[in-house]
Length: 322
Ligand SMILES: Nc1ncnc2c1ncn2[C@@H]1O[C@H](COP(=O)(O)OP(=O)(O)OP(=O)(O)O)[C@@H](O)[C@H]1O
Image (cartoon, rainbow, N blue to C red; front, side, top):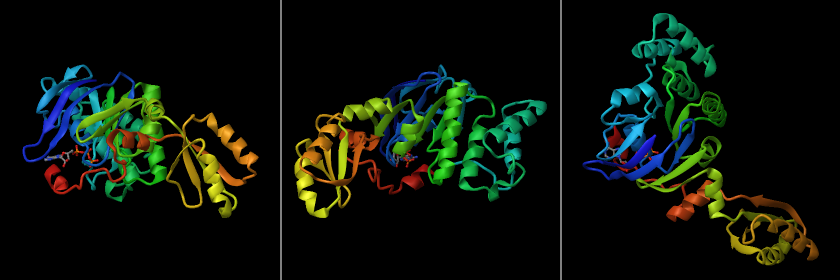
């Protein structure tokens, strides 16, 4: 997938996507991370040919998204935010219908449907109507539907938003397996740092329509750099003394009540020196933790805002999207 200078301007709205460049290699899992309203869904709609760009170009599976829409659509599968599931159809009926739409023969439809239902763990619910499905089951059915025609690229728009932790991790394993074992290229959008961290080989951070950082999660975190150490003084009376010792190793940062934290100016290796210094001063700590920088720190460093609550106010956005 090659994207160059892609733009989408809405007539009465913002420049939702403001000239983005990206490349996703075959078999790669790419995470598009950003707050509400950053432009993630608009990007996915353009790349899946559902919304025409107002500028720039993109090739998906080698095909131009504007001039070769049908070829693009034949190569991709998409599970988007507004799942078009019919509450009165069963999971199996949905798969059958989708397979028929893709021109899969009657004999193959059944086989394909069964295999996909099994893969996403919906065999037992296969003949129940979708209106009785949980949020997690609907997302898994969505994923199965996106895979019916064996696409080489899979688009997932916020696949786990609103799911409980268990359903979230079940979906994560399925997506990882697709990328790892079947070489499917995955392009997923998410507002969850952890999701990008777990699933993506590379992460692009999008804010207000532009990509502000892009790399492997490890490299992005390493760029922001230094880990922090957090200590819980065993006796609250010794808090100031612990602050004094830790302060020699870096600048103090906000931490949980009852704890002291500093960003280690010498990196993780400084932890041993911290322990020795505390010991020398006879200061006891009940807990000592090394914290690696998170993707949230990366977002903060690149945009000056924290990912939590960095989104747009959403005013009118929902309406406009409908
Ligand atoms: N059809 C539309 N008309 C006008 N403005 C729109 C339309 N669709 C999206 N926008 C605006 O474009 C910007 C980007 O929206 P987009 O949905 O792409 O963001 P997002 O990163 O996917 O956010 P979310 O996580 O909420 O889905 C927002 O400011 C949004 O209000």
